[in-house]
Amino acid sequence: MSADPNKSNQIYFTVRDEIISGKYPGGTFLIENDLCKQFSVSRTPVREALIRLAQDRFVNLIPNRGAMVPYVTIDDIVELYQLRTANDGLAAFLIAQNHTDSLLARMEESVSREERMLKDGNISPIEISQEDFVFHDLLSSNCANKRLIDILNQINNQMRRFTRAAADHYALETLEKSVCFHRQAVDAIRKGDPAAAQAAMEGHWKEMMDGYIKRSVMGTLPLRI
Image: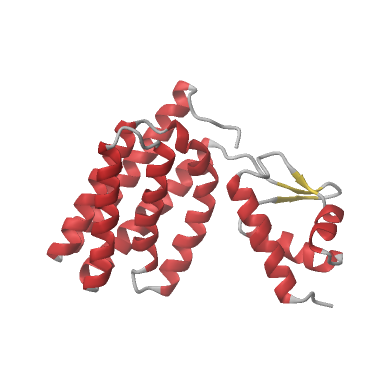
């Protein structure tokens, strides 16, 4: 018998967000009995939620042991950045072809806020990175391709596990490069140049991926996540 889908959804989204936030770091085992008590439900909706979390790569289901939150590895990071490079580039291409004045204004406002925050020496990298999320959410959710939006949401949710954990380690140089690429993308969208918008976003994500690889080699990446 299937569980109440509302209960299963509640458990899925709550546990997923807690994994993303770092409440359940890599290596944590999620105990069914504890989740049943937390959500005041039977095992069925908990198991259904855990199956969905496993399908979305937020947990590994280990026979006779349960659901474990996997560690984030450099291979995971590279794979996700490769996907983000291709798909965010396509999103920027599509937006440059067909966007509203309202969307362009919101994207320009976001980039301008990032630029002002960088000039203010009292604002932390974590706060600046939050505005970075705003910009990318505007880009990924407004490309007018429902399947692409679904793909980007899934990639983005997985990426936030390590981008949030690494935010306080961001160097200002890294953030400045990101904002520069954001500005290039917005300028290209305003000019109606899809190829330039795509190139800006692809360059941005490749730069970020190369930075993570370098930090991994140097041993400065804040993992185990």
